[in-house]
Length: 231
Image (cartoon, rainbow, N blue to C red; front, side):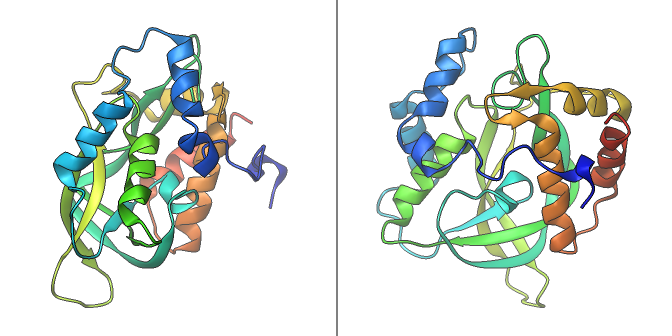
């Protein structure tokens, strides 16, 4: 691995402890200015609206970005496959975790159109609903996504689609970035850093995870090489 490919830390800041203790939420609130941060009650209501407390059956989550290399929740199985109607896109500005108010970074969202190859991950553990609540604290902190149940089509030839929990971009959110060049996105990713670490590390880990899964994404490749040119 080249020096430019190395991440700053092998231990992600966003983990079970920081989510359970609401440390991420507290750091966002301390920064101030973000009136879209959901309370614990709001997060619970959002999860229950999609997956109620008395839900029976297997729960699967779709991973397409950082969930591939830092799922946080307990996973017992995973299947590679594709969803339709959304594509992987660096379209979510971050002024906290991977950026700052004066130098925001960019992280991935599922934006409208096309399709996306990723992984369906089966939630396990003694309390799968509790695992989902951790996931909501991770993904729905400031309501920049819309949680949805969508069809996932496995690569293993199974005809029946699998229902997966995923989080699609909220285009009405103030952090949604539209109509931005690859070069500008690369500049933002290469230069930004926040309490979760440099934004470029987020890209590097995602690129590495996709390669290990043998998922070819030309868009990610283009941004990856553009960011590396800034190093």
